[in-house]
Amino acid sequence: MSASRRRGIPFVVAAPSGTGKTTVCRAALERDSGLRFSISHTTRAPRDGERDGIDYHFVTAEEFRRGVEAGEFLEHAEYAGNVYGTSRRSLEEPLEQGYDLLVEIEIQGARQLRDRLSAARFLFLLPPSMKVLEERLRSRGTDSDDAVHRRLAVADRELEALAFFDYAVVNDDLEDTIEAVLQIIRAEREGRAAELVERYGRDAVRARWTARPEPGQA
Image (cartoon, rainbow, N blue to C red; front, side, top):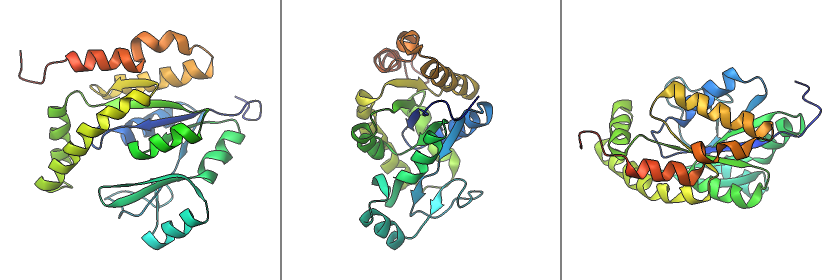
């Protein structure tokens, strides 16, 4: 692809914590050479294996505050006691070069970008069910029991945000989810978005997801 012929499309990907958006975004990035990744800033400490400038830009609360005051962020939001934000520079440089951009973000931040980034497409990842989400959060082993309950309460509220997203994908099977995200990106890139409404459109997916029984139910 010639990166100089077009301006890229930002794809904003959000999900409740524990749904797997980081894994899905990283895999999609590896499989599509026309994609780049927007690296967010955060005040939280790195988790095991995370690298500064690769997974996040890890900064202090004071550094983040100065960036906000200087107008460097398109959005920023607090989540679970830490602040996350998307800098203008992290978006503009790859888009101007013609690359489509994955913007992995917290749902509060996605709400802000909906108003400020008119060219973006918004994609919501859903867990198979709330029960499965709880199991995933516990299996990570990074949160206390109280923290898991807080994250689940937040996730329950965050599901209401699906109303302002364009697409939704249920992360039931990782490979299927990665392929679904890539299908959405390719269709938008090629002007075939109308083909996606029944399969990945927000309302169609929400209706099917709501009708699913929880594991163990008939």
